[in-house]
Amino acid sequence: MKKILLLLFCLILFPICINSLYSQTNQDSEDPRFIIHTVDLKQQNLRFYWKSNDGVNIGNHEKLKKYLENKSQKLIFATNGGMYMKDGSPQGLFIENGIVKIPLDTLKKDYGNFYLEPNGVFYVTKDNKGVVCKTENFKLSKNIVYATQSGPMLVIDNKIHPVFKKDSKHLHIRNGIGILSNGDLLFAMSKGLITLYDFAEFFKNNGCKNALYFDGFVSRTYLPSKNWKQLDGNFGVIIAEIEEMN
Image 1 (spheres, rainbow, N blue to C red):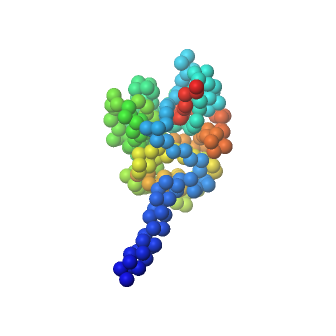
Image 2: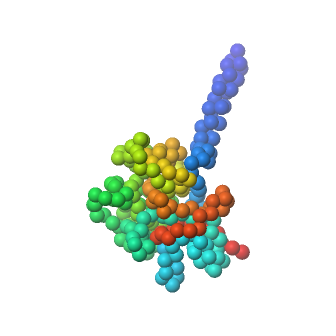
Image 3: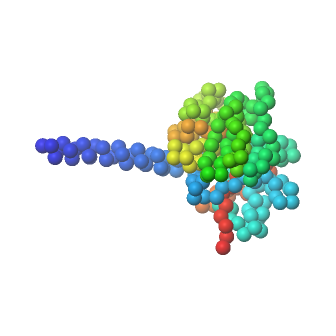
């Protein structure tokens, strides 16, 4: 009798465990609304770009691809990484290779997504850790290799930004970044028009306790492994995964 009860218990528990594991590892790939890319910073090479070596704005993924090819590097993935000014310079903090190129913007203004409090910072450290935090919690450190500031935060301490409304009529293409429970990075861009609430909900449902909005209709993603090759556009910061070519 004990063996039968144990067998029944295992039969009940097994699908629950499998479903839990599946949801943690594959949930992000189930949603057809988004083009998605995950990055393990310990295994993949992520870098932030703004200008080429000659000081010219790179501007889009096509130019970045050619720029990297000239350096014997292959572009694996790229997405615009935050908002920008009219001259293509990053709006808010930008750190590249440990150097602060644009300082943190702590102004309080009552217009635009960037200033919808709280906004936030996404940064990568020397020990291969990715962090999304509120701007007010950001602390400059020599351990930071790359950083970009944007806004608003999508998910804050496992809660959707309180200003977002499920029934909002503001629909746009949107892209952003979230940190998964295992520390990996989750990049996502909507394939169609979507509300900020639904976009934030996507990150929350995938276990991201914190997520940051990058931009709206100007958003572009290059991910040839999923047959998604948006090479046009003209923006500021580009976040890219690269690979050294032999």
